Length: 494
Length: 97
Image (cartoon, rainbow over all chains, first blue to last red; front, side):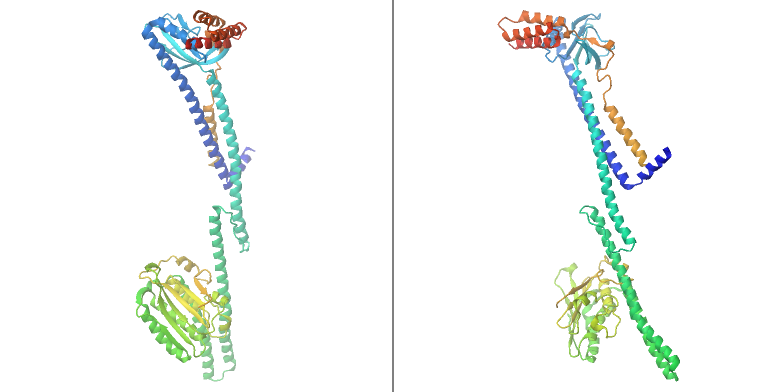
């Protein structure tokens, strides 16, 4: 039975809430016991010291009489003190060397009062009523001895009264501590329960649950947990979206390749027909491979693996070269490519990645611009001071543009706007641009024009490696894409 | 660990409170045989004070006489300590007069 009780108590004590509340209650009870004991000790000590000092002062005054007037003077002084003792607490006894009483109000020398260096607490009988006295014996010159004392009955009454008061105070404080401990336990349990309920709901698949905010310090944990859950949901959505996109977008070329090969096997009669079918199938499969390569490259960039290639180069020259390269492609599409570039602009980053990003932006612009329209490649540096200084590489077109909802999702992997469904592509171009922007500590900005779209790569103009504070967020998302976890700024007007 | 802490803290509290509690001697619970009699609570001392006042106080000191009379009456009616208190006050008044 006893073992069962002990086991039960031990089991209960493993509860963190109960442990906290017990620790709180015990600490409170112990500190109040300490405090009240100290109070009692100081108060009674002060009372004792006051009586001792009064006795000592009284003796020294009597000793003066002894010195000045001898024994008769001392006797008169004692008589006078007893006559004037309105407080009725003075005790004196003067005895001769043979022990005979000379003067005083004690009937005889008390037993065991022998030493002159200590105070004695002795019982006295006053008008038939017992009381307590504090006595001090002194030796006088000539062999006489004297006792000077005080009736400390008042103090003796006050002392247990004080002790009782303090003990009851302690009991009340302890009861309050127990109550407080129960409240603390309740609060702790409520906090833990709210987190446990939320995590349990999420474990059972309800990803919409969040830890409720209570308006106190617990919110620090709740906010972090909720942010963590938001992030998990975004990651899961990203994984789901990419999986769906891969399944959807890659099935078509694979199915087409399969159909072509099957058709070739059944219907091709000549070597040339067979080779042509195989080449078409290979072309479709190359497209699939290119998509996977693009995905891997985005993941690599997001993981920051390409940071080793960072160097300082002239951005203006790089952009001019790309502009010249794409002006031919623009002319073929009956478009005009204009540039607005500075004479020279030093930039620290991966030159090939920047080329790739700007090429993707120009590719998109050419792909979605109507004939006889203009595409502008520009580069501008803002007027902020050194650490916040940024360079904006923008490509503006006069094409079909995007609506607001498409803008918000434009950098998601495999996302293709409704108006671009019939245009060749895998929907990975802007994802790659965004990954490159993040690699350089910048972001991608998309804004609508009338007509057209402006895609801007905003990058910090650093001369040394940019801080890698976002590395975790990038590496964690490397296997999946989600828009809101990465910075893409969207504005509705140019 | 928690049980040990609980026992330790409880024991400490009890010890502290016991240490703070007054003992029997402090409360004045002495054996009756040890008690020393105080003589200034007796009827004889009352009469001694009366005689002292009679000797020292002139008849014109009305307040002193009044306190003396009250004190003597209380002592005679068995209220020795209140009677002595009145007589001491009379002596104090006499001194300050």
